[in-house]
Length: 287
Ligand SMILES: [Zn+2]
Image (tube, rainbow, N blue to C red; front, side):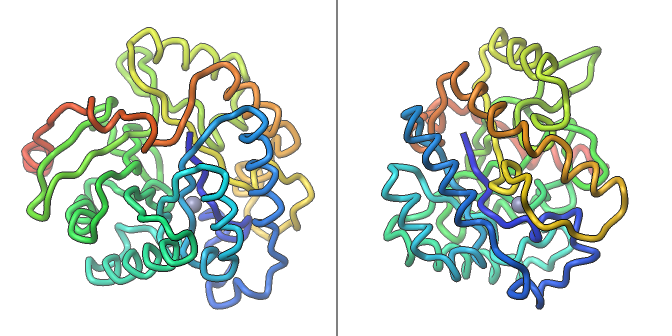
């Protein structure tokens, strides 16, 4: 179970109308919303991995300490929430190093895991995984094996896998999908959990379990906040961001109660990840 700890104005759908240099001018709601999630998890006795945006950790170090005090794992969600495939490797390295440092300073815990903003580890940015290994990360959970306009690596493995980068071993936990008619469909996280009917989620997760695959679910604190200020944007952005905010808390609670979820670290799943020749796959797909 994972939480991408960011505020409503950090979401990629608003990147065109919200300037990064003005983030400080928006009314922040990330503390209250994250605390609500922490209370829910405490009540259900569930531990999760919280991939915190470095910018948030910089401004709310007490929140990072509360997450750690709840027995949860801290992970990194970049510093500036930029799409990796739009960055130069040097920019990515600097952003990641800064975020990891801020989160570790605030929590007093080492950070082992990374979740890319908007799942932006794609065929254009696989170089990022090598840099993660170089910076001391042992796993990543950013590859979404689906077709999508902004992210996705449709032919990536759907089960956790590990591979050797020039800087060391890296384990990947792909975001959960299930198979229908030869296609991978996303299920159980964020907008998919919020926007699609509960029956879809139940069916999809049932299929994943039947295959014996571990399930990676995720949520953003702003997704349980129907009171958040409305931002300008296209109607499609609004549909994606604001639909079912009032239903999400209960949906997420139901999801957690129907499964056996924990943090990546406590799951022990890294030990079960199969070795996979990731670079050979990329070499092949680039030809
Ligand atoms: Zn994010």
